Amino acid sequence: MANAKFQIKGVSESPARIKVKARHFNIIVDEPQNLGGDDKGASPVEYVLAALAGCLNVVGFLVAKEMGFEIRSFEVDIEGELNPAKFMGKSNEPRAGYENIKATMKVDTDADEETLGEWLRVVEERCPVSDNLANATPLSINYISRSLSSE
Image (cartoon, rainbow, N blue to C red; front, side):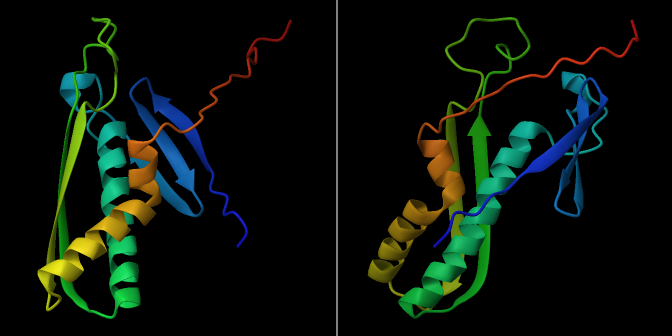
C-alpha cells in the first residue's frame, strides 16, 4: 500500500492565533486568555489530545470490526500534563511538551475482557497518533525569510 501524504497550511491571525487549512476545513488554533490568546479556538496542545481521541476512535472501530465484535458506543477521556514555563521562556525545563498523557476509552460492547485486552493492544499499536506521541519522529523545521519592504 502506498504512503498517504497529509499537509496543512497555516496563516497567522495574531501572535497567539493561527488559521489552519486542512483540505477544505478551516481550523482555528488559539491560546486561552491566560496564555496570551483570545480563546477563539482550542490550543495547539489541546489539538494534540483531540487528534489522539480521533485516531483512537477510528482505529478502535476498525479493529473491533476486524476482530468480529461490535462497539455500540465509544467515549474517550484524555488528559495531559505539561509545564508551560519552558514555552513561555521562563525556565530551562527538560521539555516543553506533555510530561504524560492518559487516555481512558469507555466502550459499550458484548466482547469479553480477554478480547478487549487484545483489542486495546492492537489499537494502541496501530494508531498513528499514539505512535507519533510514544516514539521519536524525525522532524525538520525550516524557515524562508521574505522581506516585506522593497529595496
